[in-house]
Image (cartoon, rainbow, N blue to C red; front, top):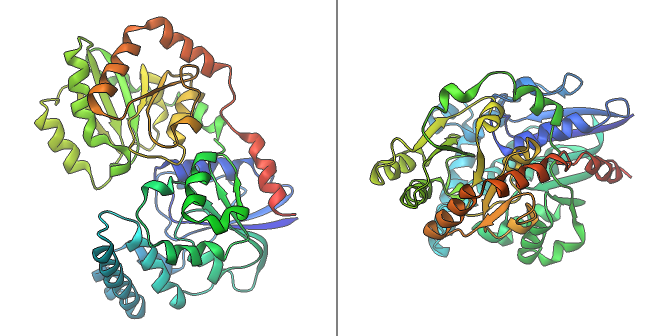
Amino acid sequence: MKTLLILSHTMELGGAERSLLGLLNAIDPKEYSIDLFLMRHEGSLLEDIPKHINLLPEIPAYTVLARPFKDVIREKHFVLAAARLVGKIKAEQYEKQKNIVDGGVALEYSHKYTSPFMPKIQEQKKYDMAISFLTPHYFVDRKVKAKKKIAWIHTDYSKVQIDAKSELKMWSAYDCIVSISEAAAKSFTTIFPSLREKVLVIENILPIQLIKKQMNEFDALSEMSGQGIKLLSIGRYCNAKNFDNVPNICSHILQLGIDVTWYIIGFGGDETLIRAKIKEEHMEKNVILLGKKENPYPYMKACDVYVQPSRYEGKSVAVREAQLLGKPVVITNYATADSQLEDGVDGMIVPLENEKCACAIAELLKDKSKMEQLSQACAIRDYSNYKEIKKVYDLFE
């Protein structure tokens, strides 16, 4: 039996975490023994980890990476606190020098500078393969023994501000780099051309049976009782998802004579900004933040159209899930949009600019036959990507 370790951060609600569940469900437990190491045993998806997966115990040192400094000091992780502080200062210096705002440098530096002081993971065991599922990718490289080491890409690197020289060293330590889409792979190799030969595309595998079971657990219509057509978006409240522009887009749709209520499921640091934009556009009755939901699928089932208004994506898991449930899907024309769906066939790609976006959505909402056509196209396609598991098996060879 082959042995595999997968390392990730938590099991909070998110596309990457749901795709991890898909991977865990797809791997044959009769042929592969799987250990899962989470830096923190947190998140609503913890209970959905398959029973045959061996969830390793928390290691206290790894839990401190995303917690306030005062908590780290109180628990007497003095060396790790100092290393985090060094990483924070150096990240701020780099971002100031390069004029970076809201980049990915701080998290990368935090892991880079703390990694020398982290304990080994399963020190007595050598795996056939180890996967670092979420960046930064320092710990599988430095703290796990394995014959082969794999790192995953989940985002569009052309849209993320990073320290490319530092990250090149991080990525170079791996035998193979897995991207979730051709477009994400292309943007990554544009930044890191020397790594081109290491990059392999393995699309997100969806836990289809779990999704179809959970979508019928309750009726979400009681929480989606607003007037008109029900639009739904799901994602973290962050810059990438562009939810701060939803109130303005929704206002334009209403001005075009289409009655809609736009629901947003998620959580994150931009919630205050989004609420301010809702108030600014007087959209309190038409843009509703539903907050964090452990099970988003009844809401997907209840909506009329699923909308992903993102500024950038690697490949949105929520979009694939909505297609899997046979919903008409609209996405904005972010850089990797063409790899997400077939425009006009199993979804629509609309402009990112607010007014043009609203016009395109309104045009679709007026065309009931087109919406039905999109739904029917989704219903006959397989969005589970279960065939991709063979590529994972091939990595062992």
